[in-house]
Picture 1 (cartoon, rainbow, N blue to C red):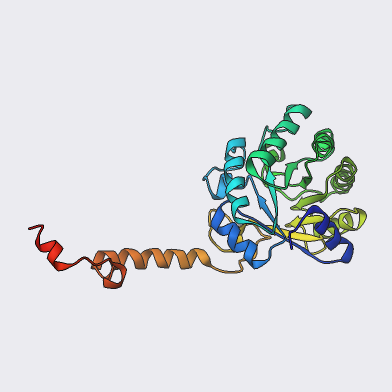
Picture 2: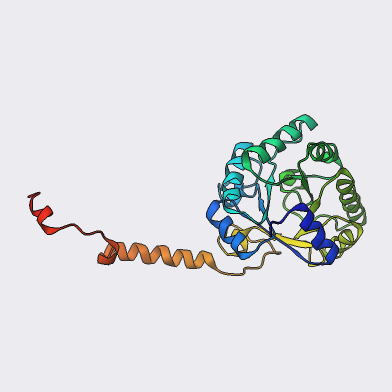
Length: 275
């Protein structure tokens, strides 16, 4: 069954956990879709895990459109959410609506995600009014990493916790269909999840959220530049890939690959005529 913003809400209402992962390419999206994932985020995290940047700041609209379109060609049942990159929505409400429209029209996604709380509520409301579903994102918002002074847990103080709760209620009021809570203390995230009627999707926010999301390279051990505390490795695919690459190199060098079964035949008399 096709996952939609309505099925996400139904899962929250029934107490069923929502599953999401990030992905950036056709073949991986197809595998995730076949596995039965509820939602896929084409995250601007591609800047770090795919493009090799130090953070998400350099990612462009064209990057996001390109990767979102590839993912949408592979995912037929998952709800695909396209991430709006840095400075694609902050300048004005009009800019936000235009770029959200591009991400949906050219990228093919069914919803967009943008970072921020009360400050971006006008953008959220306008995008939703343009019939584009919006997933909000509060807590540690990577596009604001320099303002935070690094990748730090948010909402640990009384003031900070109160602000996050207010931000969550604000984005819900603005029309967001769900909100990502990133690097938020587990008890606070659980409280926010109970206070909101829309689903919360946690990443480093504990099991009390309505759903979970991880960067797929993190959970498969394919990205080793750094590993956040909240990541669990469900497989060490990175080690398997390295071993396979090494085996390939060795077999090519020793001449055991390609073997006869990997080649195409030609009649001997044809070859003789070439001499």
